[in-house]
Image (cartoon, rainbow, N blue to C red; front, top):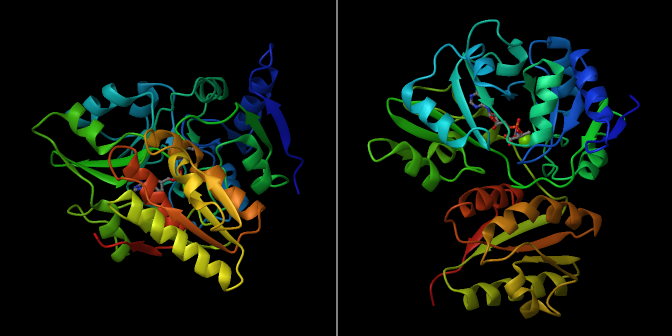
Amino acid sequence: MTNTKYWPADDESSSGLKEAAAALAAGGVVAFPTETVYGLGADARNTDAVRRIFEAKGRPSDNPLIVHVASEEALDSLAEQVNDLERKLIRAFWPGPLTLVLPAKTVAVSPLVTAGLDTVAVRMPSHETARRLIELSGCPLAAPSANRSGRPSPTAAAHVMEDLDGRIDGVLDGGPTGVGLESTVVRVLDGVIHILRPGGVTAEQLQAAAGPEARVETGGESAAEGAPEAQTAEQPRSPGVKYTHYAPEGEMLLITADNDDALIQAVRETARQARDAGRKVGIIAAGEHAGRYEGAADEILVCGSRQAPETAAQQLYATLRECDRLGLDFIVAEGFPERGIGAALMNRMRKAAGGRVRSVPQP
Ligand code: TXA
Ligand code: MG
């Protein structure tokens, strides 16, 4: 057991930030806020420090980590080359929730970070505290989400403590995160932007920034899930996408429908049947629909709004954690439209449901 320190990020003297940076420079593992989710950071060049990330999370060693930088110079010390289209994306979205997978410079980071691949994933967070922490520590920070492997990612310092208290050196508390879902991971090959993991930057935004000559390919992940063999040039993939993720302890079923009334009816019926079978049932619903589920489940959990899907993205992980706190053993969740951030939201909801998805046919 390690004594996990807790530092508020916004104290007058920045003493928390300084202590956290010093701990990282000394080879420690520290959780910190980003605009997406909390990350669990360590000096990417220090193999012993990076090993502690994997141990604290219980993360499989074949799942590589994203390296966080605070400048483009730091990027150039990690990546062998960055092409014009990649530079364009960097100019459009950095700092921000976009991760680029690039050919790695040899020995720039510990081989544990890249899990032995010849590529390295890099991003520059837009969260002020994250950038200051990287600068003050003087390290490129390898940082996965700061949750135990398989659990929902942390969007508040309290979630980090729930999962990792006693296993890491400290948590820098910067309040709730903004986006609420992880960064978009892309690989650019032959003028095609492959989305390996949907996230905070949408496919539509990537296409708009890249221009009409570039193609955005969103199929990278589903192809990867069926094909666990090595990454190929034709179909780049992200090793992490094959693992179970974000799952609440109870069984979750995701229901989708094109029509709101059909959706509500299917969710109500499914919840009621499970309840009749003696299960403790929760419904995850958008605010607009919550009132229509009264009496259909033991708990109704509101997750954002259908009018503003970014609010559902912000709240999803906390809502999944709430399901565990309430001891729910069956969770019926409403699907959201897959436009914009809805694509990343539904990607995470499908994973949380362990692939249990029912789509209601058009009436
Ligand atoms: O928003 C985020 O990206 C957060 C915050 C903390 O920055 N980090 C995060 O890290 O989500 P993690 O470790 O939970 O997810 C990293 C993803 C995994 O799916 C991993 O397989 C993929 O990035 N990845 C990392 N390096 C890669 C590489 N060289 N090639 C392909 N995929 C890579
Ligand atoms: Mg993660």
